[in-house]
Image (cartoon, rainbow, N blue to C red; front, side, top):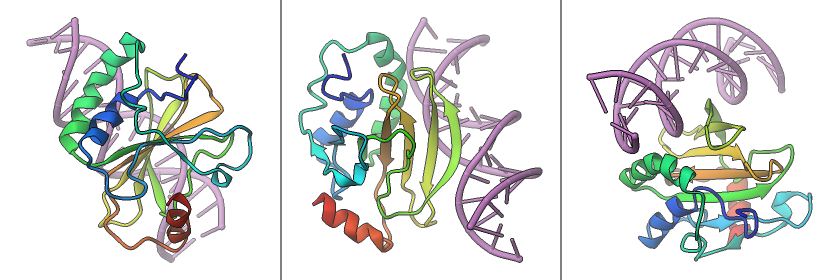
Length: 165
DNA sequence: CGGATTTGACCAGCGC
DNA sequence: GCGCTGGTCAAATCCG
């Protein structure tokens, strides 16, 4: 059912942060990509779903339980958390203009697919990113951003931001 | 040669 | 108090 409106697992997590209005950057909002076809994800503008978090109804209690852990952690961090859901069967790196360096991979229990951890290559920038495939639709990729970029956006970022705004 | 990627191990937090 | 899960680090390896 979760696939109906593209409700991603971390939806509740994001909603809490979103409710506090901690998002300041264009990318720091809860977006949900939903592409009708297998075309390039960058060709379709993101769909902003303000109420996506509140929308979660009778979700899987089991997952909620397991996720309570990261939920609290996320709150403690206090940074912005954004979830992107893109449809790309091969590319799982959402090009947002920043240079990401993979620093870890972990198999999570909620999903049969491994989760990849990326970090902004700029040392002064503590922004992290998590990428994992949707458990319901392996063709979808869920990208989660943590934090705010505090450095100049490298080139293409400008285009990306223009695109998102 | 430099930088990025890979993989396993380690650590911390939370639930039971 | 123990076990489980998620997240991070570090050394080795690979690619450009």
